[in-house]
Image (cartoon, rainbow, N blue to C red):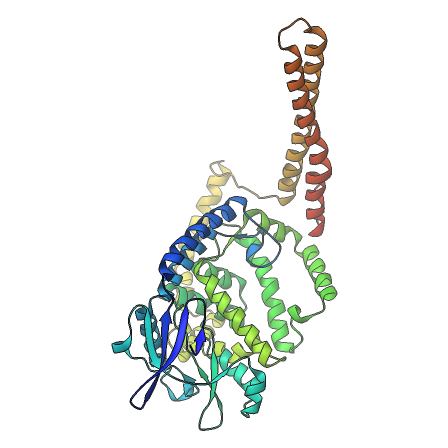
Length: 463
């Protein structure tokens, strides 16, 4: 075979003057999937049950995860990946989408449906150089930095497999594997556009939070004040780095990053604690493979060019989102100007309905004066105090129970010498006293100290 992987083999075939690449699926692959995915389903259920967490990324405490949902998304995509009839449709659609002069450097092989089945895929043979083979790329006279830039500019979630030398002497990209492909619906696309627009152009944490809610990444009904305050801090730092061109925080030395994190926790300690307590963020299973594609793309880019920066390369593309925000660039720009001037349709509606809104507020105030409304205020200090008191009370309860069982064991052992089964009963009470007694130092020196240290990390006191 020309190449082999876990799902199948690729062979070269000829017919007349045409050369084909034929991908043949391994035998009994679907049956193996059935067995392996059954085991993964149990593992996903176990992961949800123990609720694995760690600081940073998708395992952070402020992010809710459903590994079972990720499993079902993975299962759907894996079964689609081994359906070569589906893959040939994806390839044809990809080729059509990039059949434009500005994408002349992107190529997808021609496909042959008459020679394709569910387990055998036939496409045009397009030889090239593996995208991570720096030595051969340089021997061909190609620029690795240019290739990394073009692979990022494709802005796709698929893996880039090979490069070829086009007649113009520029590096071109051949996309081979179209098995694991998916698409966003209208709601997801609109939410993604709104998110980037609010992040890059408006720098508005409220609009970013609204977009994340539409994308299903932010739960409805959570404490948006904390989310928006932390989000605004991130946006401000992001915008400042973009404007100044300074080094990104992720590229700083480890010690400097830790220093910045400690400083940020002291400034936003209350908000971080609120986020961790409520877990306002959700990790949708659809985005699992989108993030995987971007991480892979980032890894390939840094292999080709040490100065590769995916964030900077996507900035020009994000400017084109102006055309997608409200349908076209003119309308989007006009809406931004009207927003700053206060002449949007929503602003005019606000001015017209203002008297009615004031009357409603007056009615609410009068009802509050009559005692019909009871305002609720969230006090983070009180919540921390309550959580600490719960641990203290639990320790006191365990100590009392330990003493009670110890006293009972002593009484049975001394006064019940003539009772039948007195010794086993006394031993049982003594064992219970030991169990509850051991929970006291564990609660004091482990749980309570862990809670205090956790709060101190965010610059707040729990006492």
